[in-house]
Length: 132
Image (tube, rainbow, N blue to C red; front, side, top):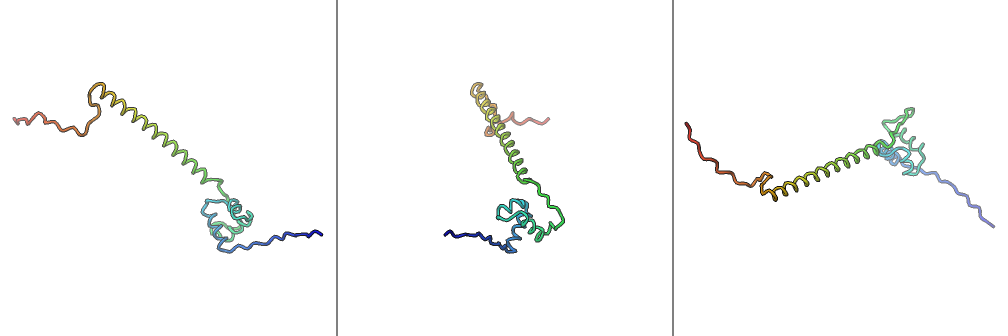
């Protein structure tokens, strides 16, 4: 004889503090309502109900418009800008190294000091001129 097993879904109860925490995370703008629902394992509508109930910004009857990945897009733009600036700095450093090598080669071949040498002692000058 086989036993018939019936799965009974239990109804979960969430504390008010938990609901307010979820709404707070939504209001900070880092996660959208669908992302929060997946994170905490509740349906989207439940998250929206909590938002309407506990949020000071969103009331029922107002439409919640979420900018899709606005933080992600901005972050990627900043990363691209940083990479561009790093390339530019790298190119400038290569140019500086090249010019310094050229100066040292010219100094060695010509026997002249092209670089301004800061530790050169001051000249004695031509002496004092007599006032007329």
